[in-house]
Amino acid sequence: MANIQQRVLTHIDGDIYGVAAYYTNNDRIQHAVVATKDGSLYEIHWSRGAAASSPQKLTHFNGLVCLAGFFSPDDNYQHVIVGSEVGNLHEVYFHQPENPSFRSPLIHLKSVVGMRIGMAAFYTPDDNLRHAVIVDEDGELHEAFWSPQEEPDAEDFATQFDLKDITGIAGFYTPDDNARNIIVALKDGLLYDVHYISKQKTASTDFLTQFDGGLVNVAAFFASDSNDRHIITLNAKGDLFDYTRTAQSDVGKTQVASFEHIVDMAAYYSGYDNYRQIIVATHDGNIHEVCYPQ
Image 1 (cartoon, rainbow, N blue to C red):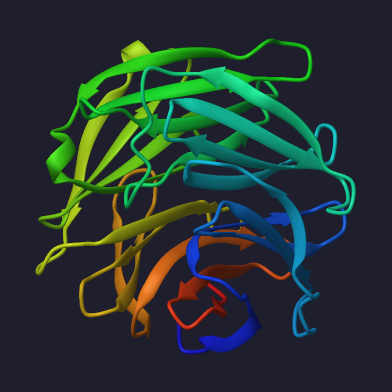
Image 2: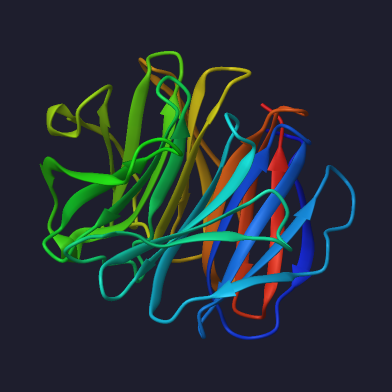
């Protein structure tokens, strides 16, 4: 990872609460959606090396506690999933950010603990389902899943963590084994992969590794050029690490950047240039891009 690049993409006025980010492979564009503390959502997009677009306001949600974003190639829609403090999940979906559509609410869950922990959301091409995973007030993982043809439904996982121990979750689909992977990071630095192929109740929980000094945030993605799983971790000092795995074993941990006063982060793989992308929001309102090849 010698060729690590870093730049400021844009500035968002207003206190930033969280960020989601993803790549759309139909047009080779990268996207970030930024939530501010008043519940507003702003979309920016860019291509490799080009300037980012001006922030475009998508919508506003009261009581927003978490968000995540992904692209569904079966219909070329971009999706932003928002969790609210009253247990609702909302979906904003669009081809162009000027014309968003909504499913509001998408589904109601018992509770959504988003503050600090976040949400995992992704698309699975083997069944064309959209997935959103949250943590509830009891530390249980709950997953909502749906498609344009199937109404939203929800299942919980047998795996349970102590809510006070969880620092963040992230998720992705791995096409080399058809698994859905929910990465759970604990405050003490422990990382777990809760993964399943067809049924949430049958999920296995694997301990992956531990980061000394603890963790405060996590993001994750699958890189199709190498079939590697990348788990991006943040410690209290502001250091970002890329912990890379294959399906069977560890590849290693590499520090890729360091920031002061990070609010939130997201990460994804951009297929047109085979770069790994980390989008970082800082307290000063800046949105940063960190990117590197294999």
